Length: 168
View 1 (cartoon, one colour):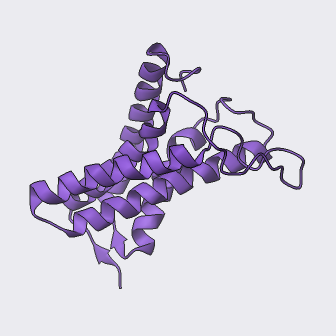
View 2 (tube, rainbow, N blue to C red; view 1 turned 180 degrees about the vertical axis):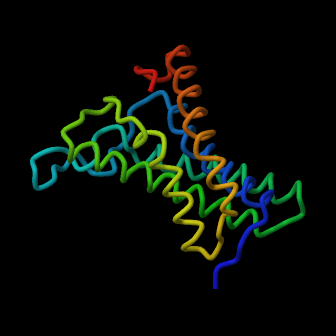
View 3 (cartoon, rainbow, N blue to C red; view 1 turned 90 degrees about the horizontal axis):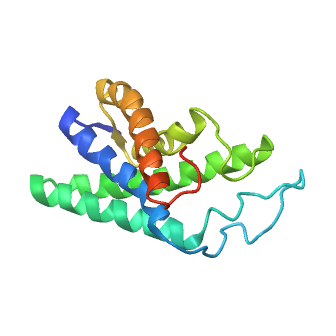
């Protein structure tokens, strides 16, 4: 049965997903594509070269470390599990977003407003729910515009730092 997280627990469960989503950009090399360079039925890449095993592992690892810190700081071990699930969900949501973008004919790096900002967040929320954790509805709703703004700002910063080729 799903457990409703308190507002503070909800925030602390979501933060690892934010870390997970942002971490892969720190890799300065092209890794091994998750889709192995394969193409889907429409002839387009399944995910594309930007979704790599190394990026997936880095995202989950970074998110898990943040989850461990949150759990330790609050003496609340369920925050570790919730944060790990949120991190995994964020990375899977991001991959689903890439899959959708490829189906729409959008190339890697092409902007897809809202999809780019909310794919990982939706994935994190769904993974938390699947793991038995329900993010407090007020937090889920309040965080949506915050996630959109943070995603935009961090991508602009990553672009200025030459970590990303595009500011979105």
